Image (cartoon, rainbow, N blue to C red):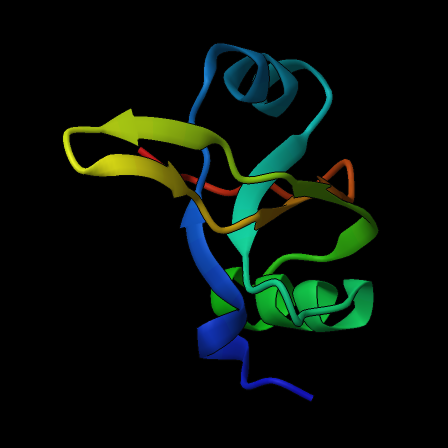
Length: 93
């Protein structure tokens, strides 16, 4: 079990994530790769004080980038899409 403050790294604010935030009450976060769905749910509930209805997670493969000293492989990242109770809301801005 991971501490709640270390599970959530940052909220992801993209065009699609902002649409989901406003229309479907779903929020996207970058999370620790070792965190499971229960850890993410517990972290969001404790940090933001809301009720979580569901969590979806996905792993994004790290890209290969060409730099002046050769090719570099980025680390894979984990993303979590959190669906909240219809009465709850998170103010990110």
